[in-house]
Figure (cartoon, rainbow, N blue to C red):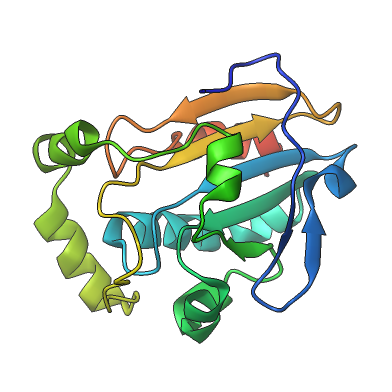
Length: 183
């Protein structure tokens, strides 16, 4: 079931790529940007992570916590030099998609197919190769996972729930920076 604005964010506990226990409710009192991504080899997700890393100084100086979930395992994420560069933000593998299910994030063959019309997969794959993103296929990942982003306020209430319309559809970067009050 998809979540909506003005709902409390479902809490969860998970283990990040370094073996640390992460509990979302520990961030209560801060703004939280919770991003659900596909897998380590997804060129669209890697491009988005790269965009966020380019804004890391602004985001680190904001009052927002950034949390990334991938459907890849922690082991695969930890092997990825590109993804380890996300630090200090929590990077959590959820191959069983337990947290994905809590947030109503899932797969859609129709939305996956829409990607070929709405986005440019060949350009994204070329960018991935040129920029050194991970391109080794994650055999355990779903081909039809659709990304989602959530803005959670200091009171642990969802201010924005964005479910992708295709594999390259995340909340606009400008909106994320504005929510985080990143300057």
